[in-house]
Structure formats: C-alpha cells, structure tokens
Length: 290
Image (cartoon, rainbow, N blue to C red; front, top):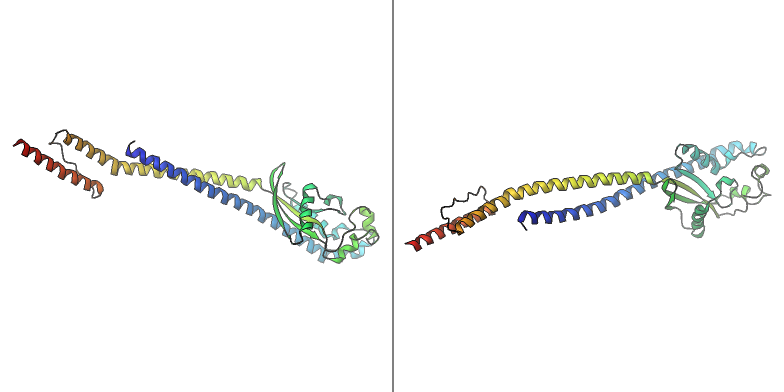
C-alpha cells in the first residue's frame, strides 16, 4: 500500500471517529435543549394559570359574593377562570392543553382521564412530590406534560365541597349533588396539568443536527483534500523522485542528475545523505576501474 493511501486510510478512520463522537454529543445536547425549551414553555403556561387563579380568588370573587346568593357564578371559582383563560389563549394551538384534572370534580369537564388519574395517584401517594414532568404519545405526536398537585389547603374550599348540605344551594342547583363533594383538608383532589407538543422542538433539533453534521463532514473533506495535497507536494513527490534517482544509480547510471532539494526539512537531509552516498559510490567505482 502506498504512503498516500495509508495516510488516507488513517485520516478516514480519524474522521469517522471524530464525526461519530461529535454527532453523538451534539445530538444529545440539541435534544436536551429542545426538551428544556419545552419544559420552560410548559412552566410559563403553568405560572399564567396560577396567576389567573390568584387574581380570581383575591379580586373577582369578593366582588361577586352578593350575586352568589341568587345565582351561582362559576367565574368566582379560580379553577374555572384558569381553565377558561388558558383555553382562550390556546384556542389557536389545540396541540397545547391546560387542565385541572380532578378525581371527583364539580364540573364534569374537569374529570381526570386514565393517564391523568395515574398522575394524581403519584401526588396522593407521595406528599413530598411537588411537580412531575413526563412525556406521552398523542395522535399529534409526542407531548411533554408538567403537573402539580391540587391540594386542599384553604378551609374556605370546604364550604362548597365538604358535603351537599354545606354547599351553596345555587351551586348544587347548577351542577347537581352527585359530584364535587367529600373533599378533605390537605387532600390531593387532582392535578394541574399543562401539555406542550414536543415534536416541533425535536424536529428543529434534528434539522440543526443535520446541518451540523453536513458542515462537519464538509470541513473534514476540505481538510482532507488540503492535507492530501500537502503530503503529495512535500513528502510523496520528493520521495518518489529521490527513489527513482536512487534506482538509476543502483543500476550503474552514475551520470544521473543530482537531486535538488528546495527545502531544509527531513527530505533535504535525506537528499544530502543520498548525495554523499552517491559520491562515495562513484569514487569507489573509479578506484576499481583503475
């Protein structure tokens, strides 16, 4: 195998390892960044929901206390307001979702589905768990969710949800006596869940990864071409010329031209050594002839 072929074989191996390692690291980083970006979006939506809940509880509910004796106004319920506001906000993006999934809700639309029941179960079984993040498959693609427990910490909530008898008559008339009762203080009755599509950020990460790998391969190829040219000009060509000249001298062609080294590197040192050897051979041949 020729010197240039050996060089290219080693370079190809190094290039392959470099691209594989860089690609592995880059892909993991890009996917992690895409996931973190999605988590940040979900957390922002969650904070918006909490802000709406707090505003409703502190600003809206006190203004409507008098009207509540005549007609139940769901706008006074923090969970209702948060769901309505987030629903309006996300109406143009149905792949996003916010829900206050409850095991025994007053409003039937808040009833937890099977996968949401599992999340609520995690919070009920682990009192120290304040937030959970996960992914699940949906018809629109992978979705990331962030969930926080809905725990009854305010005794005022039990005025409506402890028993049918204690609940406002207007609320019972609107929603009926079958659901939303029997709640207890410090009990986890559901979970706030924000779902954000993960497919788009991952697609962007894949596109960025493809551009990165393509650019990396192009750089390696360009460097390989330059290195091949340099090796051929600085090493292969002068060594080939010197080898051909040595072959001629070894066959008795003592009048072969001198090798002209144009540099002061190892090739020039080899050329000088060859010239001295050639001079010694010529002198030895002349002595033998005489």
